[in-house]
Length: 107
Image 1 (cartoon, rainbow, N blue to C red):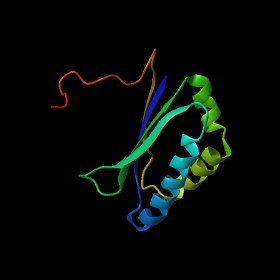
Image 2: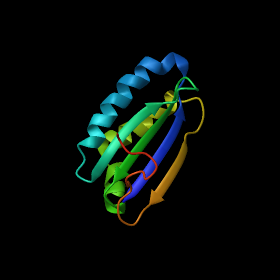
Image 3: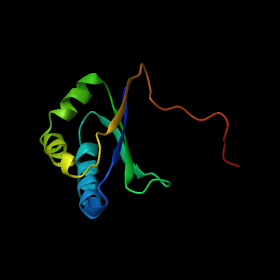
């Protein structure tokens, strides 16, 4: 399983364009055969800082992802949206990327 977390600071004047673009990109990535999940979130303390959390079945699925037409277009489009180079956390995990949290359970 591949787990990737990407943080990007978006130009305030590009916010609406970013939101439309990331929404479409999310839908495209979620349709990929090797995609397990793809979600994005805005930082509640830092306006226009977004995190993308994505998981792929394996490294082959991750490699296939970056070769897709929508990823190639997104990577070419993204530099005009950001104020600084994004930060990435890439983890190749044996087994599942997610497990249940032990400290909190529903009542």
